[in-house]
Length: 151
Image (cartoon, rainbow, N blue to C red; front, side, top):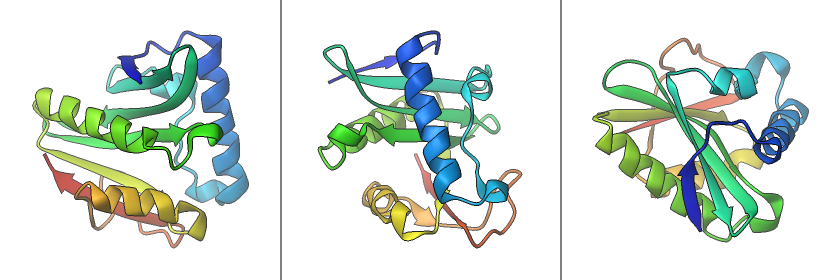
């Protein structure tokens, strides 16, 4: 697997992210949907990575800087064909390493509280994330879970 910084200009990643946003909209109440769309991911505060297996896009993830030492993990997604294959673990390990290299001290995330998101929460716990209060602009939400970890 090859993990690259992506400028989000390709059609393949645009379609992959649109599937992500549509899936989140189908699972999560609109007021609790926090997935970023393509334009929001192109923000200079965001670094976006794509995971490729040959020419196949198998996953993606991003960090959005909140301040000089704190970033939020965003847009973690694995292709349906590669779920439970280790792609997410490799991608998350890469992102955490890069975040530390960028000088960040903490990384936080928001994910869903529904059963659908249990595998994601377990993955984040495996990588040392602990549950926390809402951060940044988030507010308490029964559909959201907040997690954080130092780097």
